[in-house]
Image (cartoon, rainbow, N blue to C red; front, side):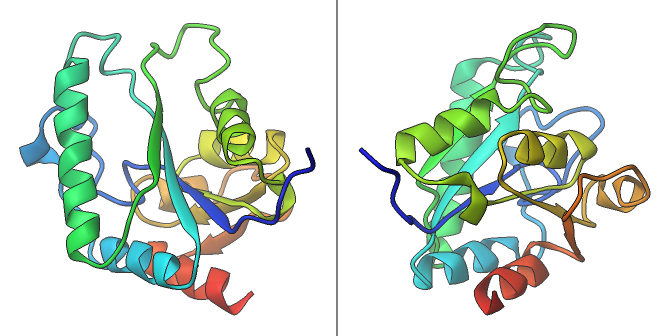
Length: 182
């Protein structure tokens, strides 16, 4: 069955939707949205886009939090997005530590490829928006359209060797403006 032209945007979580922390986001209380990010998700949804989150969560492997806590964090994220008029269709996460060779941990494309497979869509129309080099590398490896926001780690990432065609915007709200005008 051929892939359809589903309108899909894949977002990294920490540093894109919510403020990041060098000490990891380990509880729902620590999860705090970046100004305008939830409303941006709402605008994507209102325009007919499906929104999926793809996030590395090595804090699980490190023993900093468990799956139940991660679920509670994501429940808060879903509720906050809904209050802003948005809907996050699904959250895909890699629970493995950075030194593992799993295929799902960004910068490898496994998680993004799984999202594309499950949603039956073609990569060339899908933006993958992140704040780190590994996010845009995973997008490029999956043949998606890489996007970088300057929130989170984005400011230091913008000066790195980014994949060809990476679109850079100030934050998720600005990136959604770009997507909706494209």
